[in-house]
Length: 282
Image (cartoon, rainbow, N blue to C red; front, top):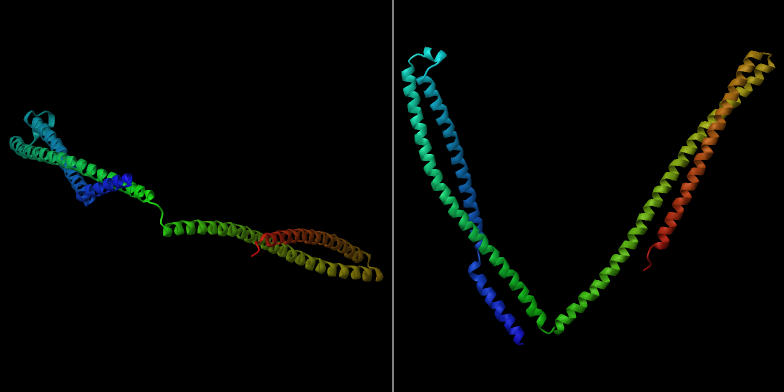
């Protein structure tokens, strides 16, 4: 009981420390946004300052060339007025550089201050997360330290029982899934066997047509021999022999397809038989 009381006191103390930290994430996000905006503005100022420095150097070179002319610069019309105009532009650029330098210094100081606030805000949020984790851990310890009630014991027993049922159902589902996969495989093989039988039947029809043409050539051969037309009879004989060879090839292809279809059908039967034999009984 003393240990539980200590844990409860520490838990309450942790919760009290968390009260003033509520909403610190929003403050952190706000400071992050301010830092991002200030950094962006400072980069823009710095880019303008770099451009002003480039303009400064360029104008000084132009002024020097026109004040100390060489080659074609001697022919520049009203060169003195041009020098005065360039000096006026240079003065504006110098004034701009001074203003930008002042703004950059101010914004750099502001950014440094905001970054310091950002570090503090992140530290506060980290502290809050640590306290929240500690609070959850204390809560779990307090709960674990209490003797389980009858309702809790009943719930735990029910969880174990449901877990056992779930594992049993998952095992059953896995077995059923295996049977379904084998049935699909068997049906696929039956479809392949059907395709082979259909192809064999098509080849057999071709063989019948060739056989009919062969019988026609045989009758022509006999008729031509009866009329004493040896040349026509020989031609008919050659065509008959060629058709006879073609018929034998078609018959061989048909028999090969039938045998292959038979083997595939047997495989399909075995796979489906195995699928149904492995299907779990109720």
